[in-house]
Image (cartoon, rainbow, N blue to C red):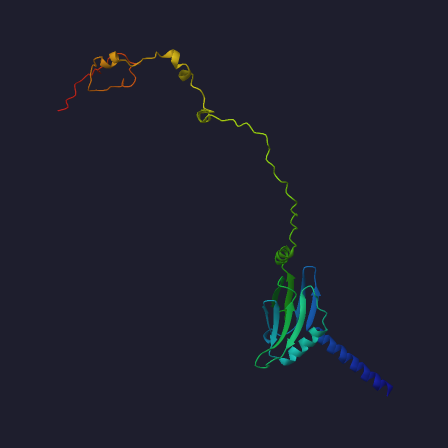
Length: 236
């Protein structure tokens, strides 16, 4: 009788361990420095995994597998750095699939998932997008305190009159232009010719024409030279 009771006890313990082992094989959680990994050992064609916004949906039409997965996840100690809460829904089943709803902590938590055929399991990697975290941190930074404006000093006009220097506009236009030594000493280099009635009445060599001496007769005081051509040009 004692041997029989020991055998029954051994069988019960073995079956319990086998059941616990089978249940533990459904979900396996691994924590890394860079991400959190879930291994879901389930058939590929029985589950649909999709991320909609900040909620991860694990859907199935196999109610038994849904119950097993939900029971395993209910015992799982979730990592609050990535996951906020887990909910389960069988609403309108079987018209709608039974769904595990996993709400991520914030929009910066991203998901990379794939199915490994060799191990017959889904691999879900949760990781944090540091770029989104930086943008959120910058947006939540407290603005700098503006300096308190102190009493401004009152401006009092001085009773002393300030001497204003009037600048010659002609001097400002010629300032910085190099001087021409010829123009500076033109009074001593060139004689000053005054226009008189005698000069105006003097006979002109060719009164109907103006040559290169027009306007500069004080430089060329001789008659124009006719060019000597080697051959005559017939213009007819």
